[in-house]
Length: 226
Image (cartoon, rainbow, N blue to C red; front, side, top):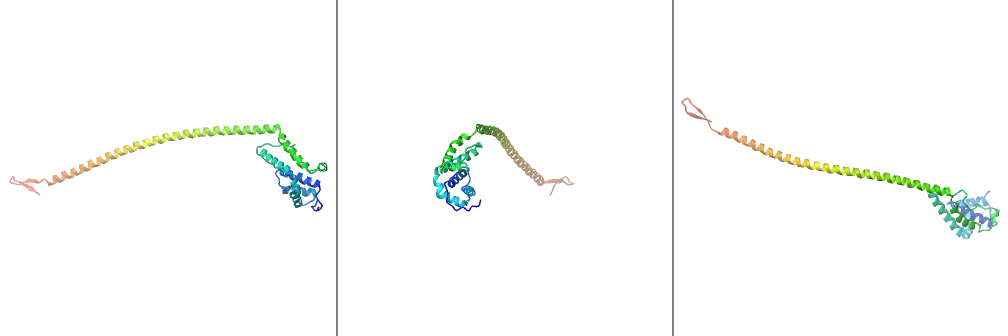
């Protein structure tokens, strides 16, 4: 149906607009999507539906809007927690001729009724599944915790072994340094002794060369050799 209607809004039109818009709010959809849906059903433009909602209808359903927003928050929370509402959860209907006869406050009453029924719509199986999921999660976390504790204990043991190895190596380094100092001192002492012996040998040679030498001539006299 083309959106060409220009006639005045009827109470039934307002009721459809309220019901559809509240449902979109409750389900986390946008008001623009609600206006487009109402426009298709009533043969009006989405802009006309939005103007009607903001100027007139919204003021009549402030309490129902608050309840719808609370339901939306509750649905989002349950989804995050992994709990799904049963398929038979009470929802606002799209509206019919019989509902239109109930008047403009039907949408607000339906939203209030849904606010009361929604928590009860959780099935026992869904709750059991939710608790089992948490049990599995807790078991996995405990398993991971034990694994981390084991890894931490192994790392602590490794650190202790490395510390002992480090102390042993430091002790060896100290002993090597001490041995090196002793050898170095002995080497220096040996060098000094060798140097002294060399000087004494040179001195003896020089003294040997400086001693006068003599030879005997034919007459039996000693003659100094230069």
